[in-house]
Image 1 (cartoon, rainbow over the protein chains, first blue to last red):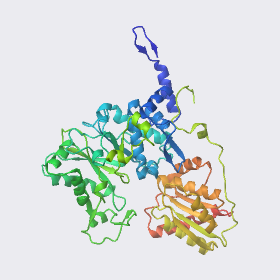
Image 2 (cartoon, rainbow over the protein chains, first blue to last red):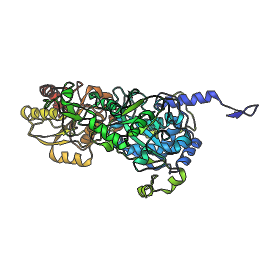
Image 3 (spheres, each protein chain N blue to C red):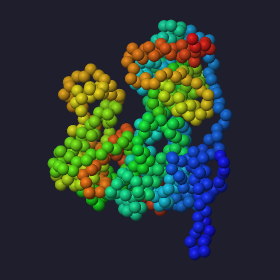
Image 4 (cartoon, rainbow over the protein chains, first blue to last red):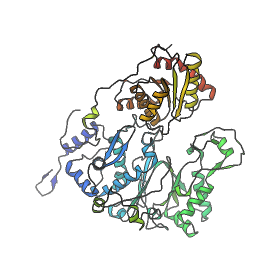
Length: 368
Length: 187
């Protein structure tokens, strides 16, 4: 850039275009243009993260490739993040590494699962992470780029690319952009991460198989509303093993209706575990009535056709979050690829990060 | 590449090593036949895999002179290649290994890595993958530094077959498997 006559800086557009094409030529892109990551830009990310550049924050055994803080920062810069997003990217990455599926074959899977990143705390508004209208949709830089940073890191640092080591049969739309802030302002409950023991700025993640909407605007009966969720959660198509995992991201209207009727977050989870499922006869009709404890479902001999087989196994593994606009009764069932650990990770600023042992706050400091 | 640009950082961490050293094709020495040999089976947990491997094991002992199926294990994590301790156990308990069935994204890649690991440890191995996973198998062979590694390919899908169909599939493939494990030509 150089200074123009009236003091504005002039961009050399040809150079910018060449840098974009260069990144495509290297095979670094997910299909969209990338921001060229330069030393000075990446240094600003590293300063914002407060962690040593060479700290190892991921290793994938089957390909023997490693993610360092520096590589995550380069990919976050390329994704279009601003440096001040980097603590959230770091926390999201750390949270994902705690999920069992990401250390196995999740990133390579025929399911093509997507990270779900839910952000809590004041950092939502500081960074402008969308928590209201169109929360699963486009239009907001942090929502779009924080997830993309994860995707580029998997692609580039782990070398897992579509049609090669990544084997998604169809994949899912928006795979690297499912980042939502919780609508704490209109949620009737404490923030999700706080309920799980991590107050303040924090991210909660898992790998998603897909999201499915539930549109229910005309009942005021909490059980009718919950039954509508249970029907979607219980559908057979999504069911592979003995149990399946799912949660709900409720719109404010649905969350408030349930809270007014006396439901806590935990009550919602418990109700859904109890009521989501299908009978053996229904499962037999689709060839999924039998399953070993850890095995896949397959066509069995039937058994009692009226026996109810629950989809979900454990209310502690059902995410109940609140996000979106309060303008309609439309919520989302979020269906896990595998499971969810139930462990949020705090987002910490550079000063605090620099003083911790491994970039995470010791548990006692949070609960104490 | 048509141009290079200075000052743009590499997001892969692989650097020039990514261009890769030339492939090292470490192949175990092949016996002339399976006569009197012990067969190891490594099940990768995918549906029908163990049934298929056992059917192949039966055919090798009843029709191809193998002495016995001497070790059968199931992988703890189908996405992750075998480690040293598993390879050592197989080396101690058998003379040739058959593994698979690569029938998913990560397990197919891992099965190829398993075959390469067994070969490097001196055990002739036959890896069975369905034909839907040839590209990911090849990508993993490259990652493992053995780009030309060959496996036994079978028609996709395998998980939907009935028990009888799985046995028929084993019979179809057995001569190719024998060919992969020995110096004999596949019939």
